[in-house]
Image (cartoon, rainbow, N blue to C red):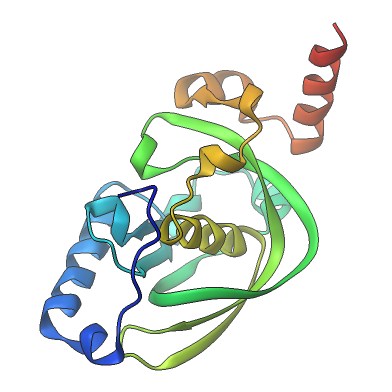
Length: 188
């Protein structure tokens, strides 16, 4: 299911009690993990539906400098249905990224720093989201899931690591330092 493009939802279907109940379950699952996003295909539903939330408590153990570099701020819980990236602005930035579908691993993934997304909200109302920094990364990650792509398709393969290894060797390094280390490794 993770490798298939999920099907769009009609407005009536999105507003149905069954889908609203699924959204509640997805929210609970994402928070229990904990994660900052969860797409329906990750729980076996081939639907263009994802939940997103980056809670302030998830950022408590991250240094202020790192939060600033990642342009990471809390994002309130919300739903995106049938999302489409309509604009991608600014430079591509690289940071380590993980996924609830591949628990325990992380890799350096390039993503657009700013995007604009058209979607429906949980009530079937059209919505335009202008996102930058970490929020833009979360949206791109979840939209990839809805289109059958996974972060490992976009990662720098040599950076795939366990979370323990990431915490031990990479967590305190900037993306620029990591890129330099990779270049040095390639020239050896």
